[in-house]
Image (cartoon, rainbow, N blue to C red; front, side, top):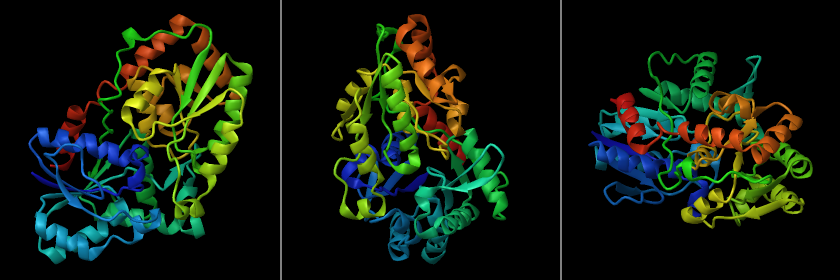
Length: 384
């Protein structure tokens, strides 16, 4: 099977902060091991030389990635590679891919991976646009482009049951019948970030929590900052907050300056340490190994989080708000609705050895089925 994997890399200078690239860099070699011939069309190649590389230009903004698919380049690429399956990592690009296949005279299946959902649903079933995709009131247009992409796909892959439910509901509301297109294929865990919990030492009365998510406003960073102050003040806890971006381009700062503002606020909070892995996965592993538990993001539209999986694969219990995929995936004893509940859970992880070790083992076990080989098998089953 010849697979053309079209990957949108949002920030090629900060690959460690791009979960889509990390996903593809683990999945493409596993698909190759399973017998597929994979070409990754991306601004940067995969780390495995067996994965063919077709260089593309990284879009300068997240909106160009959705509304400027580059038809000429698509047609040329498809004619050159003659794929049997095209993976659209940017769902909104699927109609352009379908048109490019027609123009190139190539008959290929289009598999769209919903790596990111530009919407979420409240507990009462109300659809909410993701504010990250609503600059200049573009949110509704992005939603409709996403729905058009779903309609153009032969297969639609999502990370989780939560994502499947939301995607189905959004498709229905925009007049798209997914039929039997939809498949749940979770993302693979990073093989470099796996640690047997049997060798983990529990905290001895004081714990270090780590928050390893993007500091955008729409990730609920203000809400996390509020909780961070409570945790360091009312629980035997210190926090490490990851600076995943470093120095961003002026263009990205103009579009959304919230990460810089939140980082400055967190850096001046007593009991909070700002850390960077500098794009080095070994340094990142060491930062995780130096922590005792993780904290999930407060992002309402969270259909999946690679950073949560990173922590859990390292045997770190993750505490999180009872919302979205987090409520589906995280152990119910580690979910909270209020800051007070979060403080109580963190304090118990810090002081109750048995409770901590049980949840370290459960965290690790929750990622056991996410090896690249297992995920690749599910992926190929979905797109055949």
